[in-house]
Image 1: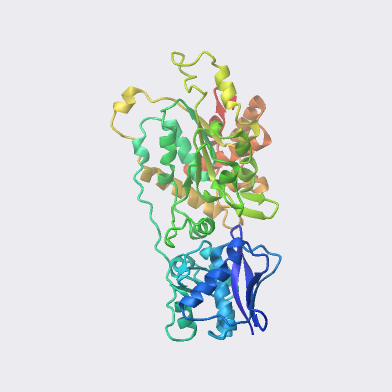
Image 2: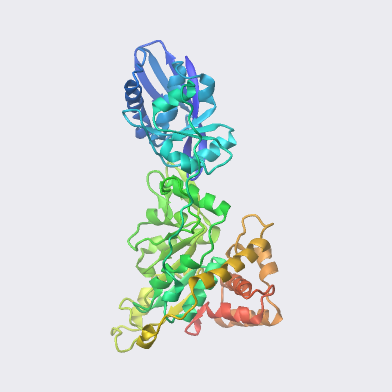
Length: 504
């Protein structure tokens, strides 16, 4: 007797369909799983056997063979337990075969037959919707998967619930989407005293998703500014929320099926490894740059990160995608993030203060900042110095603009960009524009172009630097509500590219 059920195998955020074939044939009693399973999948036979035993279902004294097709696709994870059990129940004629074949199942079985939540319910639901099948998953994973409205999602608490559903004794109720998680906030830009230039750079970076590099003495407010960046970012659109949540689903970071409309804010420690930042490991899991997709990656103490880790950021910053190539896997993850980097000017941190600086100035600063390569610096759109705040400013009451006010301007700029690029697939903000589209939307007026050419020749801007100035100028014009990029916009964009009268 042969029966089929379906599940998925994950490759990055993609869910590939897997056919679970179960055959019960005469022969010596055995339970074999074939089709390139890993250790967790191979152990499913013991969990399935125990779960069926808890339901008083005894396996026949025959040979049971489970084949996971296609056989050359690696199968990893404990979510294969439920589809194997469903296929076996259909092969034993306990549940209807057609019901098993119309189901995409995933879930881990406990020894008592209860179902444990697994990662990847959201991309699995999308795969089920494409195949016009019902998704069967643990009850705790149902709210997450139910966000894919095109697929019917059934959440079960145990294998017994699955049997009762397919035998018509007690049908399962379709799962409902989990609640949207709201960000409690609490960090307002008004809390930052002084640092008006840094606040302006933060606003421009938020409006066009430009990379920002802040250099300043310890305690000048770099981390404080970065922590308030999420408060001025617009919420994720429906498409962006789905993209981001799929990555977080594969990483197992979604909390009780809730999808957040707040943009991710990731801040890895400078001791993080390359696999932690870019992605990798045995299962080629997403790294911090992918978990920050459509959000912010804040890297404090930027020069303290290992050199090889910093250099791996260069390609993802340009392409918005990272390919993790391993001997047994080639996985691609999206990673369109805004990099916010912060650094002290030197190892002692007081290079700008002659009274407190060490005796190795300026060599101390050159050696320290020299850890950041020129090609990587060239990819940072905005570079600013964050000077220390005077004691008099600290003693004054907070009187700057609130995050809500700045967020309103940023939201208007994002709306202008959404309208501008609505017919351009893959383009959402000015940081994505390149080639002919960039020249069309960000071409400055005659005075602005003359200034940009003069600066490019004087300071030797690279072609990449030239185009990044154009993108920043376009964003400044959007914040100004101008359809044309004019000379003042170009001048301000150039000022963020130069520091201490030279290009960094």
